[in-house]
Length: 113
Length: 340
Image (tube, rainbow over all chains, first blue to last red; front, side, top):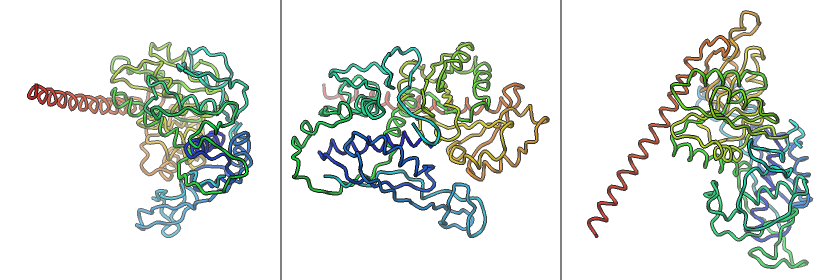
């Protein structure tokens, strides 16, 4: 996906928070990235390194919490683990599985000074 | 620059919009303040952009609903933040204490906020907006031209064309007589809701009309960016592989309708239509599929009916809303008359 745009989105969220809450340094940024969100983790890490330069979060530790994929299998009527949007249900082998978890891309929290 | 797809931001231009600075701000805001942020670095550009659109105190700005009214303006120049001007009014070195700040915000939240504003605007004006996505070369523009020609007497159509460079596609659309505006994303790999907001301002879209947004040819990035459209329509041509829905699942998952284009070429190709549709439905069980050929005209009637049905729905919703408002005005007038 477009990791540069995502990195810029993260910077925007961090800077908005810095303005609103008046902190001057961010030492850690924790992100929640779902495995179904289509984000290339290494690329995002690289882009963040570039984008955060010169900002309150320059040099901040980036921690990515990877959220596992979950889907609702219509045939089994229950939530099952999946690793891709088109995964078959691990129980019944059916493909009527709707992704319900692991699609998120969020800034969870910041460690600030 | 994005390491995955080579995209980057900072060179967006909206056609007909003169601006001679190198970064992606293509909108004539009435800024009251002055700033100098033209050094062209990624960071500085990014920040200038944010600042301009999120802290614009001008209530006349089309996106003004997104700005906090009366917000104190203490934005950064050259990428630095001026904390002395912030709410804390102080930043004493050596006295800092680490603390955790809960954020819990969607990374694409800003885009989604702009998209919601676009969607509201479309609803208010009875406009039906579709976002056409595909890989390059699927025949999107030819399909658009053909559709516009066939809809000529049945609907007003306007087009936003997204491409990295050139206004060739917008020129092709304008040749049909339909208004079109080109958005060049520069190095960007997708249109975002903010660009669309500016483009619709310039397009001067009439009420009760159809807006076709032709996204940048790319089966990856546009999937994640809501533009405020009613539907994403993914176009796949039979000269591509039937496993594309499995290779690019996000896009097929995000779409509501798939147009399988260039079916006039099927006799010359080894393309399994049924398998392709099965792959697409595996990624997205709700996906509607139509088989079309922009060249021969096959299947286009169903596609045009789908568009017109959507447009009718948008018009009806607007009309119902207008009726509701009229009734409320009448009620309030009656109340006023009773008290006067």
